[in-house]
Image (cartoon, rainbow, N blue to C red; front, top):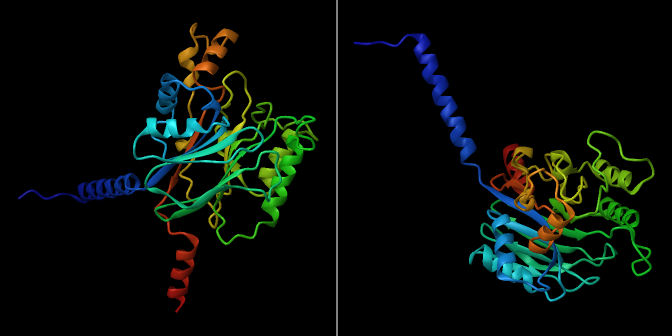
Amino acid sequence: MRTYTCKHSSFFLSLILLLLFVSAVCSEETITIGTFNIVKLGETEDVSRISRLAEICSGVDLLAIQEVAETGNGVQMLAEALGKEYAFSVSEITTHERFGFIWRSPVELLEPCKLMDNLNLGRNPYLGKFKAGQFDFEIVNMHLFWEGSKKTYPHTRGVELKLIDDWLSYRRDEELDVILIGDFNEPNVFYGYNLPPPYSFHEMFYELLSRHSMISVSLEKRVPTSIVNQNIYDHIIFNPSHYLTEEFLGFDTVDIRKWEIAYDEDQNGVLSWPEYEKALKAVADHRPVFAKFRIDIPDDDQKNDSEMTNKE
């Protein structure tokens, strides 16, 4: 009879533990949340553009869209191109554009989406309350003004960042899983590890994140979201702490899709102006941002009930 030594037993025990760990990791239930500024979506659409957009956004479970044209048709067209399992919602017009959400199971809409008028931004953000598995959350879909003008005064990026800061400071909701998402037009320059210029809009953006212990997956990933420069405009922002949006799966799951390389005809890594115009007309001038979140972690209410039961 063959007998295994202690050394062999230890090896097989380690192997079993490893397989159990891999199985646990693989069994995590997740969803992919994305944001995409699709310039003038639905203004004059053709099947080819919608098809390209659907291919770029493949695999998304919940997509927030900015710069939807006033017609609003493009959101439905994109949802249908993504697949019959997708639902959608389009906002009313707010300063010459609309917002949109597209989602599929296991994401569920908890109540009708609506424009928010309590933030007083130049474009009212579009609020969606969703649930997926045990993860219930609010998404505030935003598109901040670039610099402001006579038509948009007094709304500049600095003013709007301050309004967001105030809203977060005085928010008193029981459900704190809030995700700010969309095109913030910030930072205007990609700083890497360097600090932005003092007293600038860019510094205000970093201060906003710091003051509320929030992160932007785009900044952490350090990949520009503009297809023509180093600017990071598009963000998925939240507080990842234990009692807030702890469901974030990690920066390895963040995907900023560089779809524009298909239009880099000379393959030098930079779009020429003709290449940029071609890409803009065919798709957009932004890259989409995607991140994964777990939906199998008990929410705060369930944790509190469990803790009370254990104490009793």
